[in-house]
Image 1 (spheres, helix red, strand yellow):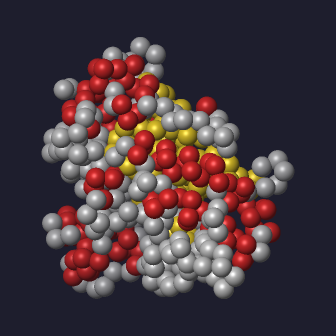
Image 2: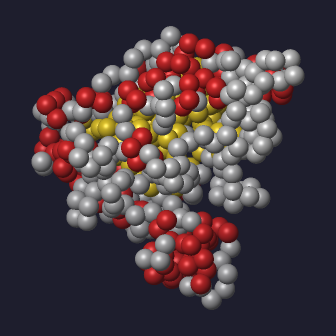
Length: 411
């Protein structure tokens, strides 16, 4: 295929994306896939269906929070450069917002590397957040949310400060690795003299369509993960995950707070543990994710059920019991995490685990109480290490013509 054919093919693909967007394609669900299929002369392959899905940049909430998990991710934190203040931060966020909007539509951004050429939007999302340091450097300490107070130290923490915190945070997700990298590279280059990269981490999940039927993700321990996440269909979902429209501060309306933790899994000792013991540590069957108390993956966990010997079926220190909202005063968060593998350590053990990303309306009512409980009695703690941590205020989605953070920086 020559360059002209590639260009025409890309135009036809993106033309179909644009035509289908108004009928649900932007939601990334079955409706969108069917709409795209109907716009083609022949049924698309699975790969082309994945590539055609677009997620809107503008909206009440930023993309990448309730968006279905993508196969590829990059998390990156930046610090504002010495001498850069509110004016430079606003200019940077304008550039970043324009570029993110273009790439999420499947359009090339100005001066990007185009490594994602020939692909559609591939469910690309770009999400922006602010750390505590951002407010001091921009002279906006008086507008910093109370919910952005530093997270407490936990006894099991072994945090690397060089891979923690940051003034600005970007979360990138896409169902194509090149599309995800193109977004990362474009935004990093556009930081220019205004901001410097502090840390960057790369994650992955299953590719859509890789399993025979839709299911929750599996982590690198082989366990089904995310089953007990709050669901958008639940009446208190928005209350738990998003700052209300009349919340404080006003610029955070419809926003959320992201806790980011790099959690290394000690896979060698975990994999030596018999499967039955692994299931007791978690409280779920490894094969299908069903609770040890029976049923399917989505069957509610029966924390009171006892076996023939009179002991509870779900052990007292099982992860699902210790982290359950019922045992934490109703505390809950939306976990939207990615696995990572960064090679092998000097002792030969894999440097692998979870890029934990948890969303909540207030960390003091979400992550903090749950992690305190886990820190004091979770059987899983023997097989994991928390090695990096950050907390970011993620404002609501920008309206048409707005950039992310405009209500803070121009308000």
